[in-house]
Image (cartoon, rainbow, N blue to C red; front, side):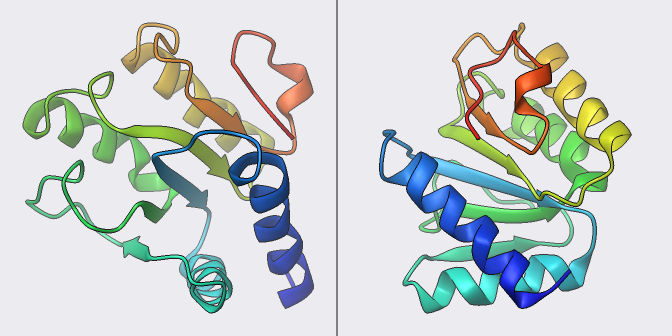
Length: 144
C-alpha cells in the first residue's frame, strides 16, 4: 500500500460515488489500522469529517455529526449487531454506502458482503457497496 493507492481509492469514492449518488452516511472498511489512518488523513485533507472506529462505542451512530466511519473489516459484524441492538436496526440506519479497500482479501470481502446481506434482508435498502470485485456480485447495487 502506498499513499498513491490511498489517493486513488479516495478519488474513486469521490468520482464514482459522491459525485453521482445521494449518499447520507458511509462506512469504509479496511484490513488494518495504518490503512484506515491514511485514508482518514487523505479524506480530512479534502474536508471530509471522518471517525475512525477501533472498537464499538456506546453511542448512537445514526446521530453522530460524522458522516463517514472507517473501521476494520474484523469489527464490521459487531458494528452491524450493535446497530441492530442499540440503534434501531441495520435496515433503519442511515448508512447507504459501504466501501471496502481494494487490497482486502477476496475471502474477507465475500464474508463482509455475506454478513451484510444476511443482516439486511438481502440489502433491502439498496445500499451501494464498492469494492474491486463488484462485477462478480450481481445481487447488490454495486459501483466501481
